Length: 105
Image 1 (cartoon, rainbow, N blue to C red):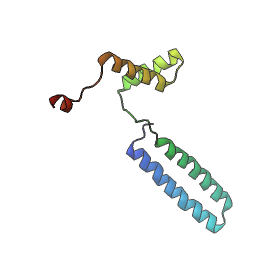
Image 2 (tube, one colour):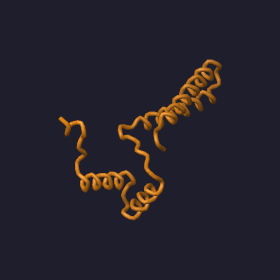
Image 3 (tube, helix red, strand yellow):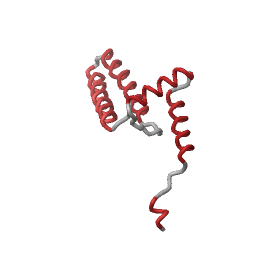
Image 4 (tube, rainbow, N blue to C red):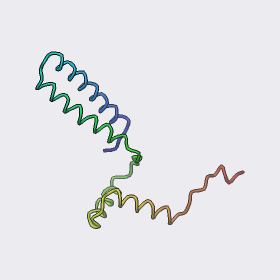
């Protein structure tokens, strides 16, 4: 899942809803419902923290994702390791990107 703004907003809305539900269940004394809300809240908070990754989401074409998955399954590596190596190889092959503004000065 790509952590887009919409995805983060939906998970945050779910966290707010579950928080309100757990407070209401706690006040009314529905302890089994309270436990369900708290478990759901914990899962959603974990998902929200997971979406706040330092690693940026870079959308790529569907055919390239299929190629990366095939390469990962053949090599036994993770998809992110194969993707990192592919981008690093591309950067090594084509060199450093030069800022056009810096070359004008």
